[in-house]
Image 1 (cartoon, one colour):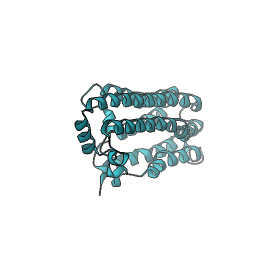
Image 2 (tube, helix red, strand yellow):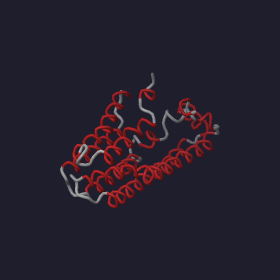
Image 3 (cartoon, rainbow, N blue to C red):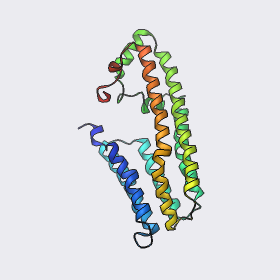
Image 4 (cartoon, one colour):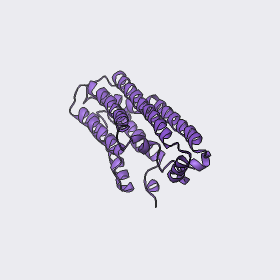
Length: 232
């Protein structure tokens, strides 16, 4: 069985990371059910548990999964310690901002993250692409195109950081430890997908289509030849 098949599907990710936490935070965190504290504990247990399970199933450490689990722990810590709700907004903005910074800085190292995120063997037939680039002498041009793609990815993370901060500041206004705060946390989680994930995904898809178009020009290969068997 491949690592991809061992991991969870999109709908499983959606269920454990968004739907179940939102339902618990908004419907089962009142004083006559779980209460605000246990509501947060139970809600955060789903994404944390699923993230750890997925890392075990794929038999490898995914940096972004680790960051996701840490982010959830921070949310729980801020909530349970009853810190000022502004720290939720700061945390929500800091995570994507740090990811964008990591993508940007890595572009100037031997291990650019753009190759991990987009230009990888999961999407592209790397051996065929590299052979075509070598034959045409366009490998250096591709590196410049990849640099632009990394800037686009960085921009998507920075956009996510800004939207995260604004959403958290607008939605989460009550004091931690209260039922209102827990329900606001649930609403923020529910809104994060259409408000934040959707525009960031559109930008990321734009980066992928740009890279595909450039690869076709630089290699002379057709789309079916560029893509790996897994991506077809």
